[in-house]
Length: 49
Image (cartoon, rainbow, N blue to C red):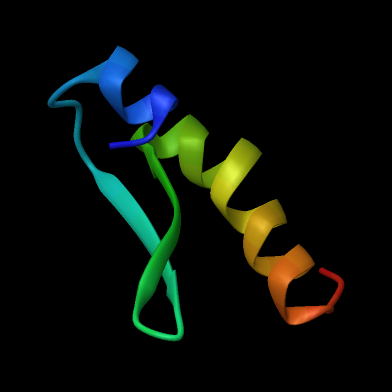
């Protein structure tokens, strides 16, 4: 579990980003999606919003 996941425990929703069959990032909550997951997806894919 990531440090962020360990701190937030069982919060939902949980978002998981996998690449090449490995989990590379996880976050929870709507704010986690907006502030962490979406920017990470853009970074990993080399795209812009």
